[in-house]
Length: 168
Image (cartoon, rainbow, N blue to C red; front, side, top):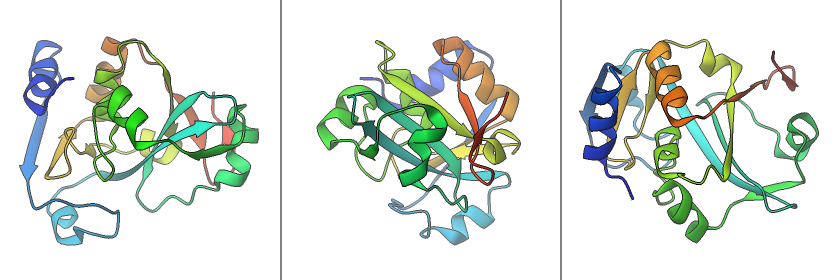
């Protein structure tokens, strides 16, 4: 599994500008409001999910975005969604609960996870995610984030959670 140092090296190798702020561990969106004030851009919540068909999903959204899991499966074409098992999270993203992050896709070498990106987050610049652990926050530009995903071969499904519709 890749570490924070591996992630930063990946950013550097792919010319993705980044800045990281170390802070005490943050486990929920509501925590760390003072930390978020110090960092401009979109702050995220990330959900690791598994559908009734066994497909894994990662949802990255702005922290304040409301996500209706009871309706989302209709929008993204999945089976009914529930939170994914911790062991599977560690196996595929290389993170533990409280540290779920889109940057964890660097560890999904088999591309088992489908990535859903909130339209509001896709419009934010910069974006802030944990760098594989919840004791720091790393900011990258939206262009840098897209470069990161492209380097991994990940094409996000963009969903407007307010309208509950896939965009594009």
